[in-house]
Structures are given as structure tokens and as C-alpha cells.
Image (cartoon, rainbow, N blue to C red; front, side):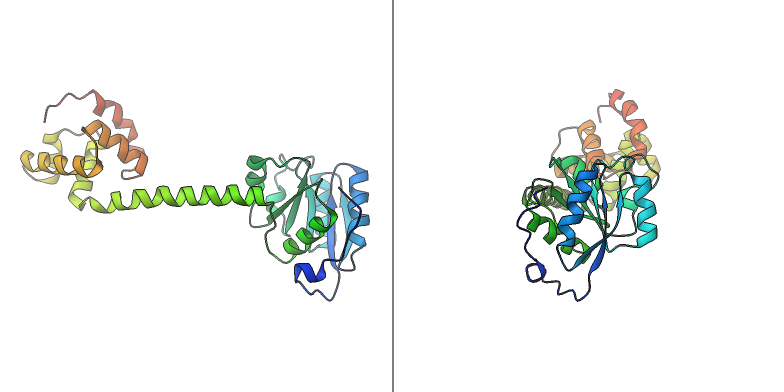
Length: 247
């Protein structure tokens, strides 16, 4: 952690705090904890009220001091094995680490774990992140924010592609698709829906066209992927694929 040139960030963070807020520092390395303490206490807005070298000690310090924010190392001993992890702390958490491992960081983010800084970032960036997280905001590096946004947009795009497909099928076509996914034959579907087999064949023809597939097996596979039929019906898929029914 760079400990040089630590400017006051009261105006930069726009928090306008009138009283110092308490911070607990959690890191397995004493020198890092000392460096963070010195850096934070240069700020009139921060007061380090506790230190921890493990998850067990951190829980005790949080209970004892009730800080406004915890600064915790991503690899804090016991954090990933303790029944109460960083995600479950009752106070906002700012993560620090040497590496910007996207998967690991995102895996820890939660309603409470709202920020991350690399230990190589400047002291000004750390102080700004502490203020943001303590105020209930998020503070993430641009690279992580960009990947989270890309993932969010991709998920929304996938849902947008699926939604029209779900609503274009009629209720009866949904019924036929569900029964097909259960491995029912044309005759069994007709009996269940109390219609003629020719009617079932017509429904199958229309739903295949709407789904953009060539046969019933493809329709069932697509239905599972798009969530158009309950996942619990998958056990019947094997039986369905073995069917060679012509109509």
C-alpha cells in the first residue's frame, strides 16, 4: 500500500462528515495493518478502533467496536471457512488484495461487501473508497465495474431474446410442449387434453415453427434451455428421444 501523499478527501468524496467514523482493519500481516492505521489516522474523518489478523478476531472486533466500515484482506485467514464470512458481517466491508481476481472478488460481493481496492493503489484512492463504502455506496475499480456491466447487459439481452419466445406460444401449445417434454406420445397428449390427434399434430406443427426447430427433440431441448417447461421433467427426455413416432 502506498503510504505517501495522503490528501484529505472530504471534499472529493462529498460526504461532509462532521465527526470521525470508526474503522476496523483486518489483515494477516502486522506491517500492512500498521500501514493502514497510519494512513487512515492521518485523516481527521477516520479512527481505527480495532485490528484483526483472522476472521475469528475480526468478528470479535466488529462486535466490540461496531465500526462504520471494515477494511479486510481478500485472503483473510478463516474468511472462506468460517460459518460467518465477510459477506455476513453486519457492517460495510471494503476488500483489499494484491491481485484483481474478478471471479473471486465478485464471489464475495454482497449487500455488505461493497468495495475493492488493490494494495498497489494510491492512498488517495483507498481513502476515497473507505468514505464511499462507509456511506453505503459502492467503490470498484473501472475494470471490474466494466465486466460487471458487460455481464449484466449480456444477461438482460439473453432474457430479452427469451421473453418474446415464451409469449408467442399459445396456452394450448405450451400444454403440448410440456407433455412432449414428459415423453408423451401424440395419442397420449390427445387423450390428456381431450382433443383429436390431428389437433395435437397441428399444435406441434405451429410450435415447431415458432420455436424455429425441425423436430420434437429439438423443441424439448430448447424448452429446457429457455425454461419453458419445468426442469423436473428432464427425467423423461431420454425416453422421449428414443421414441420414433412418425406423427
